[in-house]
Structures are given as C-alpha cells and as structure tokens.
Length: 140
Image 1 (tube, rainbow, N blue to C red):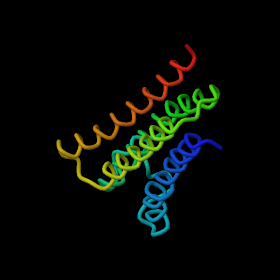
Image 2 (cartoon, helix red, strand yellow; image 1 turned 30 degrees about the vertical axis):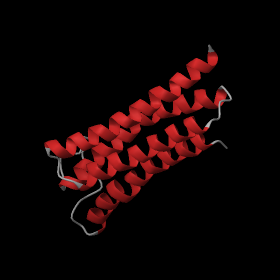
Image 3 (tube, rainbow, N blue to C red; image 1 turned 90 degrees about the vertical axis):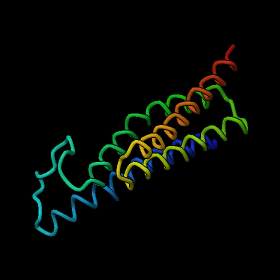
C-alpha cells in the first residue's frame, strides 16, 4: 500500500476517532448516568458542553474534507505516481487535519484560534491542490 493511501486511511480513522472518543464519549456518559435520554441529542449540536459542540463541528469538517482527500489520493494511485513529494504532501495534509481538529475541539474559539484553525485548513487544501497538480502534470 502506498504512503498516501496510508494517510487516507489515517484521515478516515481520525474521523472515526472523533466520533467515538469525543462525540460518543459525551453522549454515552450522559446516557449511562441518566442525565440524558437516547433522543436527547439534536443533529445540529447546539446543546451540550462547548467542547462537545466543537467536536461535532470538527467531525463534520472531517466528513466534508475526506472525499476531497480520497479523490486526490485515488487519482494519484490510479496514475501510478509514487514520489517523496506526494508522500510528503499526503503526510502534511493528515498532520494539518489532526492539528486543526485538536485545536477546534480543545480551545475556546477566539479570532486567534480560528485563524490558527484556518491556517491548518488552508495547508490541507494546498496539499490537495498540489497532489492534484502532480496528477494533472503527469497526465499531460
């Protein structure tokens, strides 16, 4: 398996980890202690602790960006391209996703924090575009 495919798998598992260890932990801890019922959690995530609400949004961010990463990694794989540059781009994309999610969940959202989050989001997008550029350049 190629390194970018490993990074894609890591991205998917990170998305699942946020679901299980942040959102799931919060919900089940409240359900099992009798503080909430199974139907007590609206889909918009507007209720609950601040970190829980941010975890809901961080998970949604992962879900929104996972297809983009999937497409560029698949195109890379289907093109038969394997290079240290594309490996690095895929690794940086995953690392930026991890940091973005952790900052999102763990920190109250101020202008500075949102700027940090956006910076890591922008790094991911730059990596996606760069990988796509490598694929297009290879195809031409």
